[in-house]
Length: 403
Image 1: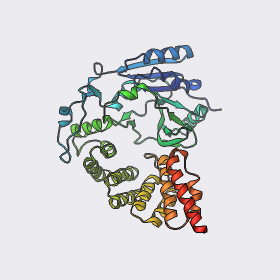
Image 2: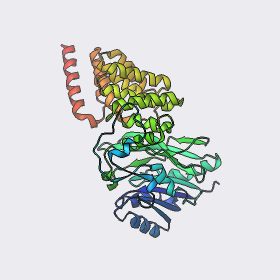
Image 3: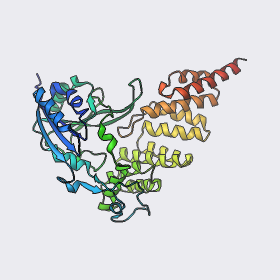
Image 4: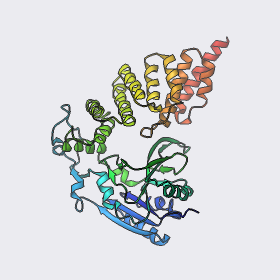
């Protein structure tokens, strides 16, 4: 019989007094210790967490991260902060600026408390997360012991419709063996996994983000973009961590599209990691997409799929083909997307549902109204208004066909 190893639950929180107990409670049957990184809270987050752990018989440790205790992790949100080093393509960081201290290294903040864990394994949650299938933990931890695995990743649900169906899922690291890794990347931080044995747990260990933490409302505008841009300019464009360029291509695509493309091309020059290259190409496709250049966007999405087949890029390519009036191509791309592997870096649940509407529309355009009706009936109610219009169009075409 496999002995269940001990477990530390690691939580980073800001103004989470309303949600922190729920997060810990979701793991309580197997939680031996809680380590809390309190990031600039102005409420009683720490007291609520401490009281809950005391009543549940769980060890509790806390580290407070703020500009006074960890000044090296903060920057002032003002124009001068973003003017260090050199721009990449003549860009300037747009406002608004708050003049306040901004946490500019989320990996550094997590690492401030990471080594406080004393148990065999560490499971991390954000303060508004819950573990949905806690019963999976003994099996997962036992398998990590038997297989000498260092890190386990699982699916993370971050957006849901009114019925509770997940509309956005990504794969991310969830449990790590104590002492084998630390956090890396200033934004979109993750565990450093190079040289480690990492496995994906695809059938359980599911975490749901309720997105109801009050700390969400205190974020500085364009925070992720600002922190990534700071990192690149402070470290130098040609020497910065390639992951900063990778995520900058994502975060800048709406605010500074020219910068997003430049960062993307620079990343492609510096990295040969196919999964990440495919994701960056997909982000660059979105820049062209939003600028009304569907042909250029389609080329980027197709190049993404050549790097590494992935459903998200194929769904986006479907949209471009539809806009270009290439309906048969759109049908083929959509059907290929439904069979393609999911990218752990880019969700496709909501994207797939939205693109299904275009798929039904393309079927209509090529005269396959019966099939279009069958597809339209399966579209999520989240798109009810668009679906109703499409169903009306299909019914009219079917009636015209019968007459």
